[in-house]
Amino acid sequence: MKKIIACAIFFTILFPSLPLNENGMFHSPKYFFIKKAAHIADKAMEAAKNTLSKSFSQRITEKDVVIAIEKSLKENGSGEFFAAFSPIVASGKDSSSPNGVPDNDNYNLIEPGEVVVIDIEARYLGFCSEITRTFFIGEPTTEMKKIYSTVLEAQEAAVKKVELFKPVKEVDKEARSIIEKNGYGDAFIHATGHGLGMHRYELPIISSKSMGIFLPGEVVAIEPGIYLEGKYGMRIEDDVAVFLHGQEVLTHYPKDLKDVIIKEEQEKAVKMEEVSKKSYSPNISWGGYTLLFLLVGIATAILFYIEYRRKRW
Image (cartoon, rainbow, N blue to C red; front, side, top):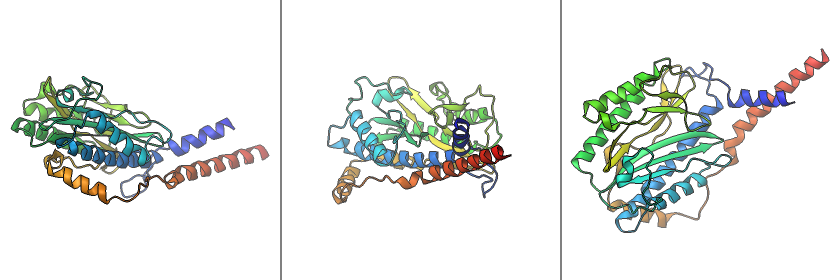
């Protein structure tokens, strides 16, 4: 019985992707669950931006943004069975650390003129998605615009390099060369990315020392960044699924410069939207679990039948 249960879990959760559809793949449950998690993360990022927009007239702290993110994650189905990693909200000089270590336990006041880095993990049925965006509270300086444009160029170029059977380190090389070309090589202080699955950090690690290649069915997070010690930092992160033919970016929250500049007039738009909302209705449905239950049931039935036939023989 234990063998049957173990095999059912293996075939339904960890089943490898097989060539079948237009992308050359039969998508495993892992792909669908991470894609759903990515959609949840996108919504949480919108909630974070809406909260940041209130900082022009209210005392908004990093903790307020964390609360808004966690509320959105819960409402949209993240962490039903597996808790997500606590979001990172790092404003001002705290953003100059990749992990956004706060000076005051997330109670730092977010003020106009600051850079805010937001890193969100969402989970769906245990599988992780990650997204990071950098926002500007008000019009950024010329230096800020240059750094952000550099990070965005490096991130988009690195994403395009994610291809089946291509060396992992080529992605890191692409991102790092663009950042170095713009004079910020010493400020890119971590790997370009990592794999995603049932853990937040999985293989492959995308760095200059990596020796592996991209395999079909893998999902990786691409997240280059630039960090100016004591001033601010910027990072952009998206999740990418690897197919036999091509790839798919699973996170879709806007990242162009115009989309991450938060202006005072946006606060009014957010207030109007909140007033127009109807009664609270969480966007959670058992329909999302149907695929998992169906696959587990089919696999278990097949294994029971095989065991029954074997005993009769």
